[in-house]
Length: 504
Image (cartoon, rainbow, N blue to C red):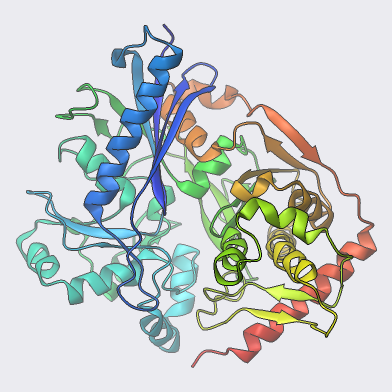
């Protein structure tokens, strides 16, 4: 029986578990378990930590049952390592001694600290935060969320005073639980999403910790993404002593899983939002265009590869919006045929700012807008504009990445639910004017976690990680001048939305 790697993929709407062959990184089983989304008031999004943990356990058990169906002789002793990937900016507080959590986790989508971020921008902290962390001052990131927890959940401040507080992202919490409370750790990809991590020193920044009132003792130890984070202990569903040897934030895990390990290689993940990361190598490139500079992954030897990142808060959620609010489609898959029913109207444009605008604007107050309607505009043309807006956001971000880095993107891997839409992928290739590679296995986030875990126990494997098996490539069919015209018109619409909903 071949060695196995367990990949835990803890996402926004649910937790997945997958088992991979350690040598080939072929996925043998995959199961996802969803959990409740909690919306206490407009703009607030929370998760119950115990729901997260139970969903992880259930996903592992269901995925293992799937392994046994295919390989009846399999034994959990065949598992040689565990990789963890997670929703990145979501954070929570718990007691280091007891494991008790201080209420719900604050999800990356949560906007409750928007006013605090505006205040910090007004006090000139924006440039300091950008220079040191590569991020913008936005409620998307963990720093102001952690500050809110300290000020609004009484036990958090009490635990801090007693030296018992753990403030961490979801990876830290999962590893704490998996190791029976023995490990309180994270990796650079998750640390770099907190607004507390200094890209130059590769450590927590003392001045930013003081700004948000976070004590260094409350934060996890930062270890390389591919290294030993602890061992499983006291679990009913896994043997003791399994090394947890890989941690990556979900978008970096997708980059790693797509095999984008060299400068100029990029990936786009289409989920609730869309995330485009470009590997820039061992140099952190400051963005002058509103993009993020972040850690791509931490090497086993302690070196770090960096990335430029563009985040669009709404991608697949735009299609869900049409489905749920207007009932024009009964499933997301139906939008492709609806979008192709009528000829394209170049005047109909959609800016999907349904949760504010992400990169490069970072305007939490922006609202979605539909341009160019006439009496003759059809549902098909509006649906097409909604679908195209997903690709057009990415076109703008890719253009800015190439401008900031001075590098032309050499390869783009795509994954996530909407990457199954052939119409969208062809339009994306046309807008980007580059070839897209879609893998057979869409679970590239889990694959990245498994690959990191493999490198964590065998560092030499980094140089020979296999690329994911290809499913289909999409080459540009649209003339360059037409692509540029479409991009230009949509960007003008996005600028209009950003200007109309200025900060207040």
